[in-house]
Length: 115
Image (cartoon, rainbow, N blue to C red; front, top):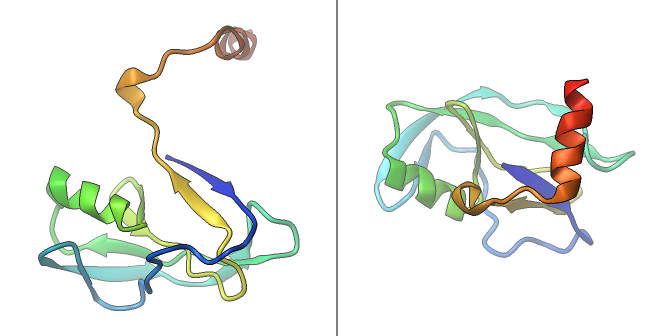
């Protein structure tokens, strides 16, 4: 899962993650386990808010795909969606891992990291 920052224009379809339930076609209860303002890891001088939520039950593969398509991000069992107070620059990027073929630069970087 990767992120990039763009111009700061509002994200289409952005929604709040502040409730205890979230809709992916069916209602799945989630529990907010962390919700604090932090220093933005991507843009200097910005404040980030990334509330971490845990689903009340394990999500199916389809539910995870729907959540990601709706703008959520996943880290292990946690779901989160940036709800930063003054910025909407983060954009989720999903890579088709099965189709990824490393370039010569990728392979060279990997070898250099092994040294």
